[in-house]
Amino acid sequence: MGYTAPRAAEAEVIYHKDLQWNQQNPWSTFGLYQALQAQGREQEAIIARRQFDSWWRNADVGLDYSRLY
Image (cartoon, rainbow, N blue to C red; front, top):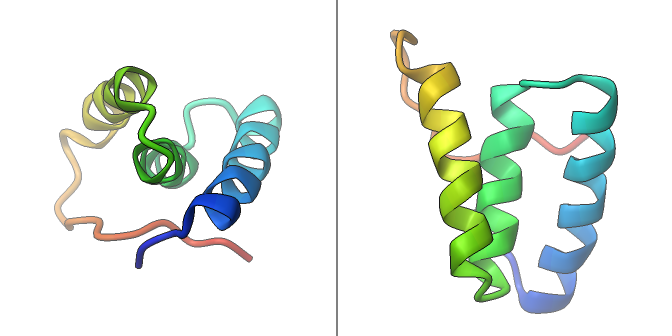
């Protein structure tokens, strides 16, 4: 699943809100990574990806995209 730039900015806001409430949520962190990357904000995306990788490292399933309800 990819984001267009306007939708990526909207998704970023939603993921940040979720992470305020549910800190260290790997689903939202991965979604934030994708949203930042879609906006060309590579440095911030790298930070989010590293956070995701550290929280997801012991998972037994892969993650291709986040869930946005």
